[in-house]
Figure 1 (cartoon, rainbow, N blue to C red):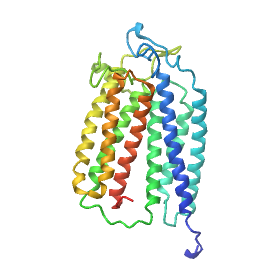
Figure 2: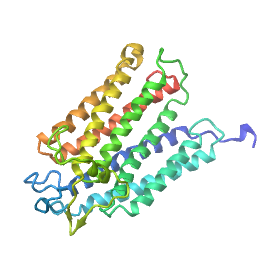
Figure 3: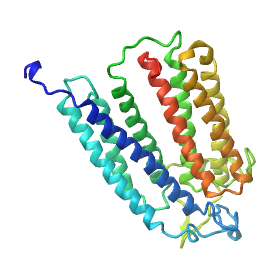
Length: 328
């Protein structure tokens, strides 16, 4: 086909549907978090007696989600939103294939988005089961991955015609390491959430009944939760939560060491860096304060919200440095 016969690339339309898909993915992550936390008993009263305890002591058993109901309305909204996202992703891929010879989205990133969406759809079929943490973990992490890919595509479209003028002497390696640290921190929290371990410890690095056997069983990807008639009985929750807390401390230090030197090296990125460091402090502080506040549901939701923003802000910084761009 002659070059002059290629239709103009629908840049603005693709940017709109990509942005809409990203916003809906943002919403669906929060809906999933709400369902999971509410089913755990987070925010129930009196706390923590009503919380879904994981303990080897039969006296500590508590009903899972009994006080919170089935959340039919939230689940319905979740499914409708997921269906809309799937349609938007198909549109993104179709446009990517149709205009693959034009400047814009390319094809590899839309295909990656489609693959993640298909995997999430397959996992979603098995989501109602509570006994397999791997299914819930796959949904949680997959949602973040999908959002990150859509966000990256949106950044590419927004900066498509921007000239790369550099960001000083900053290299991409520290920001990539920080992004990896943030991703691992979110993944460790996702595993804790998938195992209903959110309130297993009474404070930062203050967990009881932790031993090597529990660590092994708690991080077995094929483990099944012992749930019968809505009752949970498991002794690995403290180990899972302790690992998440240790990971949060270590990975937060990694992010700080990677990004703080950039404050002097690239003044153009200072605002983005300060936002990331603020989100780091806020996310870490809220996680530590959750137990002191007796685990209200809003604190768990806000912790998830800050984690999403933390990931996106770090991803944006990485993209700007990778592309050699100054912030808009």
